[in-house]
Image 1 (tube, one colour):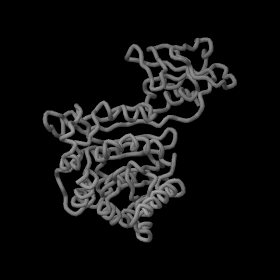
Image 2 (cartoon, one colour; image 1 turned 30 degrees about the vertical axis):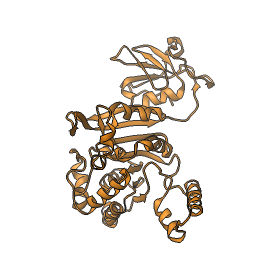
Image 3 (cartoon, helix red, strand yellow; image 1 turned 45 degrees about the vertical axis):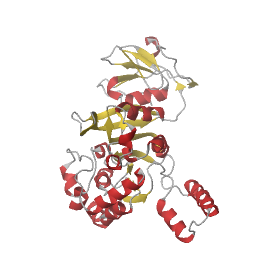
Image 4 (tube, one colour; image 1 turned 30 degrees about the horizontal axis):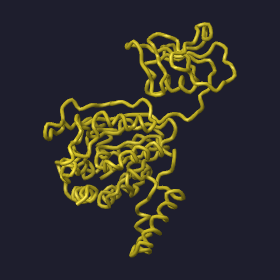
Length: 374
């Protein structure tokens, strides 16, 4: 049995009967939001964290591996009337369970803000229910039939994607990325990047290991479907998102105690957060930022260097990111005293901005209420 079949079969059983051994559901959910959920949805939740707390009003949210729908139904309360939530799962039994309560939750919320999509989380463009419909009328009985199926799927990805490019504000997941085959993990992270809008966010709760996992453990279907042997290492999890082009990649939460220890390898729950880079061009208008400290110097994901307390030259886009995004508590933004016409330019590492160019200008992030950086 390959790992994907093992995962599908185990989670189909878990949709029918609660399985306590699947992942480690985390405390800390909003009790008011939780109280609105049907008991069966809460009981058959298999996760290891709470990415739903990163949802904002008005967000379009995608939940990878949505299972029974717990995170989706929590997120639907937070996004409000203007937001939407899309749950993605490949398991028919889990999708049936999640959809079972859509009418009830729509009444409670005053509208249906959710949809559940059948898809693999490493291929968010291909709607597998559309594939099922195609196969019902075009069964594959030959190599030629198979070639036609592959061509149809590729066309479908482009003409009617399950989730379109740059259409999502936040991607969340709760203990699912570890279930994807190792060879598909890079594609999975690229898909997350594809569907997010510039400036879109990631909040992924998952299991990581403190050491590489031996092949004999990876071949164990029980350990794999149990969220163990397919885990990223704690270093590789961060690296995968950084290499895909995400910024401000960090561990927002870290399990102090391991959830499981297998052959001396510690497996623990973490939550990773990150931001998709703004695709605006680098234009210099004369902005500067000051890194507050406490470290002597920091370097960002684009190679800019920020010594503590020094006015460093940055383009307008970088200034905006540092002073309005997840790093805003660490930086003071300073507008130019006299803004000049934008010049295409990205400051080389170590470029300072003379105080004379920003003297008397607005400072952002000082507690004075001043604004700058766009």
